[in-house]
Length: 373
Image 1 (cartoon, rainbow, N blue to C red):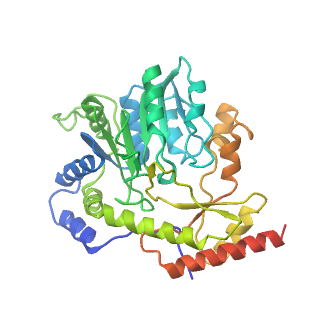
Image 2: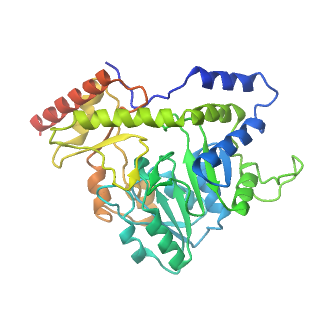
Image 3: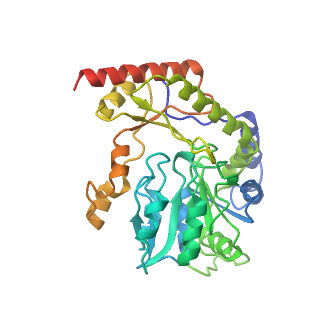
């Protein structure tokens, strides 16, 4: 068997809507963008949505729209895709890392207050792997210290924390739609907010700094080419119409994995807090300590099973070590968990037979690693 790590779920509905765009007069800056934005804002429960060409672009624009810049500090997590920190460096702000909760793998909010200084401008919280962060605690801290709150919900569309949608709280949130995400637009992302000024600034900056009614070559501010195209928006519309079906399929796949791993003592399955509705972005297991994770992954790959180590700590990336002087031991929970995680094949239409094969090969890989210490 050859089982990839991820695979998008595209039906005739998506193909028809994209073809409709290709047969129209608009390939960019057309009606599908507005339609997608309105549908997405309604789904999340926000007043405004601004579609962009990636989650990274969305985070960057939101940081700029909030006026975060040189000399500012933003509290965030070292256990995430690197864009959640790089978006701060783009504006010469500094990410201030807080170690993670060993169960949820999100930023440990109970350790956050001690990192707040007079330079702190915002908290950028990440919903890691689709598990929402404790936004009520974060909002309480933000209110106490007059801080902005950005939610990186790029991995968490449809997730809920205490009944509230991921992305519905804070000053703004960002979602992403790369092909391995729950829904895809090929490449793409969206900013959501209830603040009209933030939405206006993000729309302007995504379109080279043009105003809403400006001439094409009139630019009101520094901007970027962060626009989403019409084909991507059409794909997003069709995928969003199927969101309940898609999330249910992914939940079923995760449940099957959980059941298959019962009794495999070397494997810890993903944790979901009781007050959370998980949106399954990836399925990431943790090996027990003293098992050579790299040997296990090598065995999986040799047997046709896609896998990846999610996530290497951001603070130990070469650029961050060089720029900020981070070293091993700075965030021990993040580092310890990062050495043991494996993302296994996970997508909507993964069959039970394929899951059986993955679990079988993982168990064989663990035995192989133990026998080759």
